[in-house]
Image (cartoon, protein in one colour):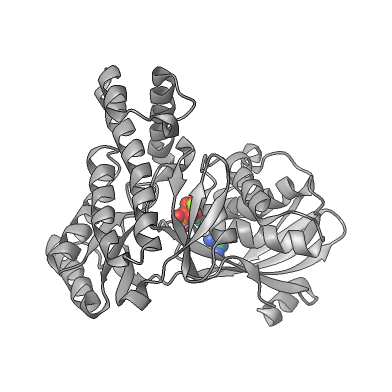
Length: 379
Ligand code: ADP
Ligand code: MG
């Protein structure tokens, strides 16, 4: 990475920063309802080689985006309002981060980006890109920003600069996770605590299955679910669905069947996160499977955001003897996670692949998820 940086920018980088992608073990669509989530960091992620610029310009190149240089001032308004052409739309993430961080003591930089994380697969390559950039800018300009605050600023960049209304989970996971642990995240207070999670030590494997169905954020379904949750909270007279303490009472008082389903999912999903944390703290990792299955059914039937390739992958995994599995991420495409005994992992993979073959779908891709360290300087 050092040599290419010199070839592109004509000088050496001052350092290299890495931020991982993440998988959310459980707690899906709870973050924007002020609820709980339990993500962990992957070993894969985005690396950024970087050097300061004193002129308030940020210039970015990505090996995954054609290697042409995108230059912009850190002094602009929201990138999303500038209508960048599609071939440089990706640069809204790093440039957006630079613009948001500018008010917190950072400035311009040259950035070379490289990644081994699939994009749009639900593993949060967007947050990894934001967080690697944010960490590089913070360190280069010696700005004093704590990791939890940095996560909120990276989220703000995705919300305001890119125009994606995401919660803070992905950025928190990328910046705060530790190896061998998941991160219990309270999305209301922003407080987090680490929870031991080392599947391999329990003889288990956590597979991430890229279902090859790519989701379409432009479809607006994510925004629609958020709006439904907000509407339900307003009708129930609570600040957020996190605050529903009497589920039966809430369901009884809502007339709209769609809103009832959304509430049912969010409230029970928060309980599943708490139950999962209890199991992990008790060393009962194997029992997590049932929780994943319940989460999947709730996302499929109540939140209604699953997709055929995900349902088929979970079903095939269970038929092959996996402990449990569920869809992850925004929905309508992306990945599924499967928890299985390590010595059954090959059989589970084959079972899913055979199902896809029978349906005439593109073969799925597998990756073993090992709970890894959060974002850091690597050189
Ligand atoms: P996810 O975060 O699940 O991978 P998103 O749609 O939120 O999916 O983010 C993917 C987008 O992030 C890509 O379309 C691209 O704009 C940007 N991105 C991620 N990684 C890179 C990279 N290595 N180089 C350039 N852009 C990237
Ligand atoms: Mg994303």
